[in-house]
Amino acid sequence: MKKRQLGQSELYVSEISLGCMSLGTDRDHARSIIDRALDAGINYLDTADLYDFGTNEKIVGEAIKGRRDDIILGTKVGNNFTPGQEGWTWDPSKKHIKRGVKDSLQRLGTDYIDLYQLHGGTIDDPIDESIEAFEELKQEGLIREYGISSIRPNVIREYVEKSNIASVMMQYNALDRRPEEEILDLLSDNEISVLARGPLAKGMLSSKGHEKSQIKAENGFLEYSYEEIQAITKKWQDYGSEERTPTALALQYVLHNPAVATAVFGASSLDQLEDNLSYLEAAPLTKQIFGEIQTMTSALQFQKHR
Image (tube, rainbow, N blue to C red; front, side, top):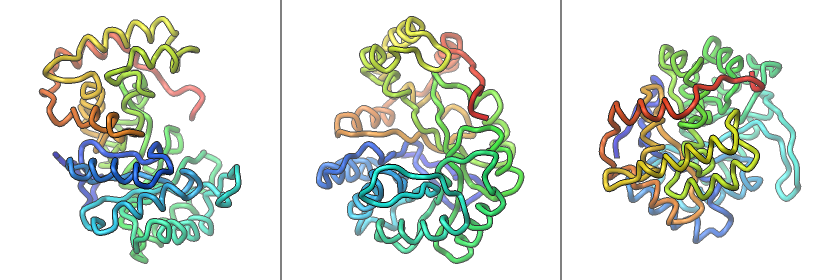
């Protein structure tokens, strides 16, 4: 598995990585997925305190016992909740971040987090205060690096200007090309890496994507109509061959941009995981196919999320 440097840090993450939100709450099932991912060479696992209200962190922590030194572990903070109760509130305060890291460390069963991320954010947040909290945690040795999980250009610009973030996690795929318009070059110029989440566009760019799109895009997707999505996903399946699966193509597309350090996919089953691992056997993405993808999809811009 090839690895890419995370920003200017000493962390090197596998080109594809496992987002743990979809693992479910069956510990044995989740562990089987994590074990297979790690055995295949994936070294970055991404979770969050909010996933199943802390349960996901516990499951991940149990699954990586004995393998911690081989893993780049990322989690997130910013949502205030009480385990066992529904609902949460947004809280990017220094007090919450510094309390949240201790709770996450306990659930994960580790004494440090490799990448600690703010799980959202708006331009009205106390950004300087949040940054101060992350910097203190880094000095204290509780985290190695920090980043944000956001698609908001104005928020990202503030962190680029004011902080030492190593990464930005954002939705990015061949259907959602919004980051290409105003974010990827900015981050690349500042040596900040992208963790591309949702690289399969809700599964619509996976090996079963055309079938999934009939449900996922029932009311359209972003600025695409249902009919446009149907046409694109049908053509996407035509790229499936012995050289690469449609899923591998989707992962290759986002990794084509040098700002992207890793494509973070979710998997709720071993079959889904294996489909994503087909990336490892795929022939290199050609300029011709990359150009065809850009022609058949749209270069959208961020509208509501600023």
